[in-house]
Image 1 (cartoon, rainbow, N blue to C red):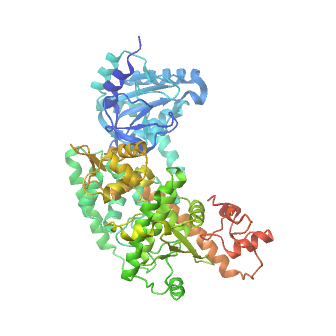
Image 2 (cartoon, rainbow, N blue to C red):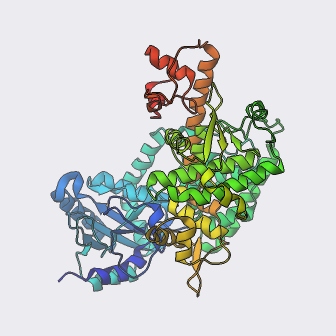
Image 3 (cartoon, one colour):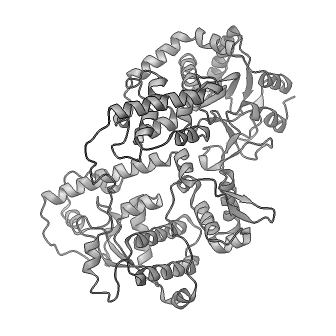
Length: 619
């Protein structure tokens, strides 16, 4: 008789997981996003659930072997599983086996001594060369590697069922394979492991890894080094061992102005599991001393190789459109009494924020509605930054601020300015490298109430990086808690965030799972001040996502500037954007529609250096 799924889950999942975290699938088992990661409990989830394979230390406590029936059918799964079990038996290893309703099978090999990410990955990749149906990807991703364990619901209905008695499986999990068994396994398959490592050295790694080991600008590590610390993946041709890669990260951190305690905290909190995995070769009591030794070597190296070249003044310039002071000066005469960074301007911006809160009911909880609310917040933040109600941040800058694609931002801006009683007004369309010039506008319908309402303390934020993973509802709920006085109940959060009760409760669930909020004894929710949104974004790998977005926009804008510098555009008789012409169905390299784009579209030509993919925003 099959074991009860709930009992299998409660008994085995906590013992097999690399850390007490589980990811839930809200789309029927198609994906297991980081957003829905939770603390692992003994209660069986109601949806497909996968435990994390690797711990915060970058090590795994069990080898997870997933034989996928979608590759070659159930017959191949059966033969591959039998062959691997024979090999495991020959090395003296003990394992747990379960099967899926679709014919797939899982083998779990518990380990008494955790093994580092790179060692586990090499073993599984070597085995995958023997067994074609073995999916090696769960062990190839330190941050997102996860797998369903016995008892978990399956996307096709049913559960992961043990292929053995629960008593035997529990005994294997409680008495994991000793270090000698791991050594026997790796020794028996040493030739295949060597072949895997040789093959990796022959592969072309990500070109960003050729970047300097330390950023030329103090205070920030290069993206390549951040990724190495995060994922543990490196170019085997650049670094011959884990030790070399580890020393490169430590040196980069020191060059960026971090302290030893900064690095140690990132290792212990699981922010840099890749770097932590490089220290797995040392016993726990010796890792602190090893880290300090590496740190002193890094300081000594930097002292001997200190560079005296001046830092470029352009180091922190954004590749996207920024507020243009001259453009605002040109419009100063048209708006009497409006002075940049004046007290009157900042008072107006805060009154506009009141009008935004009063008007947000017009935006539904749909994806578009929440995105427009965030675009408006980005404009408000931009206004505070520039000290003026006139905002000339381009679509690409707003895309970085909101986590949206720049073409989507452009569409939302057009919709917002066309509203009957809008919160923003288009003052002047963008030309050349300048973005559209917008003015924050207090709607007539809420003007009196906005002026009478007290100003909200604190900053207005666009989408902070961590919420690219946690989602827009979580961002709005967190914002409401930030501006609330003490703890807030769910009903108060519904009123303040302008979301439904269901959306608020789901957002609180997400926030609580990452220790961003907590519920007190009075059942009121409040922010956990000790949890850093910035460090959480670093843990999520969002820095990498933003870096890719910035780099893409930089290339697009460089192409556009090159085209503008090499071409003369003559005035053409063209329709006005508000006329019946599908101008908004195109997206040019700059921030929005321009005279040049329309001119060449009418001529049936594409500007040089700008591909059709660039015009569509495909790259």
